Length: 597
Ligand code: M6R
Image (cartoon, rainbow, N blue to C red; front, side, top):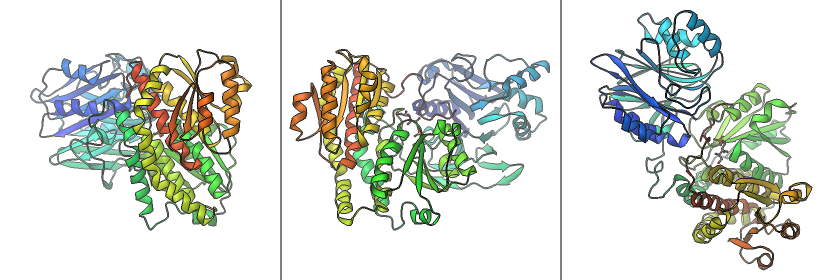
């Protein structure tokens, strides 16, 4: 999704904006641009196009100015093009604006402004903002921004730069925006990695905030009154947000998973406090649980259903957050959890707001400290995945599972012996995942084979059914191979029609109560001549006779099998995409954090 980064200080803005924009590339974008307020002469110099940041850096001449704004655009309103890229300016070219979000009433505003003599050049919703500011400007930029935003309906994170004004004005509604605090310099950005090179001191703007930022002062107002906002220290290091010698962020993030498991578990095992106050939930008479999420986080939630139902013995409903508004929700005595890596996914945030409206207590599991989800929820449990830059979620999924395991084990009704065995299993997981990673060269060979096909099925049963869904999502989003995840028993109810020698099937074969029936399903698939790759535990003799290829994973407690299996499928997707020459970290049309509904 769109990214914002802005600078005001003593240094030249241009190089800082361009290098920080490249830190935002992971969010996914199709165009980019910067504007710098030069002095003298006092004017805005803006350069933008439907190009990568690297190309933009080559086309921009040296600009003299110590305040500037930058943007990466992910097209929503108007195609990716030079005119539609941000920043957008007013008629006189004195006011430049970058914007994330959507202005819903922009058509009406545009007609009105046009009739008043304003001239529009782009198809975007954003362009109405600089024109509105121009209309209301009478010498006070901050007041003009406030007036303009009163006319606007929709979501926005905006930053305004005006020629001759030694300040940046920022405003936030339903789209994240942070202020980075430096020494005689300050930054504004849509997310932390953009400014980590320069500072780890951050303020999160809240709904309706307007921030006026100069090189040595930050003033935040809400409804006309000055407010104070807490400063957060970001613990992520810049190294964590860099590739560290790996060819892609995705591969680095896959390899970080043993550490992520250790960090997330260490966080909770060392804490004297319970992860979440389930005792209170019981006091409130909670009889069931609802988990909401999107994409990979949704699949983590589906695994969570199996974990919680087995260990807590309460019914768990898992819903896609974007669908949550469209059916009659029966939420009496229901405890709600939302899972979101970024904490900024618009569909998930909308669901949280709705849950709160109907009086549900909401626990958020998120990876980003201070994110919108963490601020709206009643309680937040942080995963310790570190910054996840690649669009494809990998280590965040594993960290989410760790939290769910820990949560469920903490309140489990299982007997002490079972829990002790599980705890041991959990502590061994980092080394088990490492074994999968050590098997990389073999997975690479299978990926070469898979890369020649255009349609693939992933099948699983029980707790590994969501793993099949996640395996298929990973493969399709980065390799562009059409992949579908299926409950193994469902293939015969329709998809069998598509099986044949050009449609490989990847079967996740767990050593649990699904094993025997899974072997039957595999035989059914083989009878339809589909090539079959099995993901099976070490020591499984039978599978070698049935499958064409076997990827071996270490033996773990069945409840933890989604972790090792998913890591193997992440590597399979990664190497398949690499073999096909795909832009792995930034797949086409996708964004890391999906901040529109
Ligand atoms: O930040 P979130 O966990 O809320 O993001 C949800 C999905 O957009 C995300 O998991 C997406 O499906 C990933 N790109 C999949 O790899």
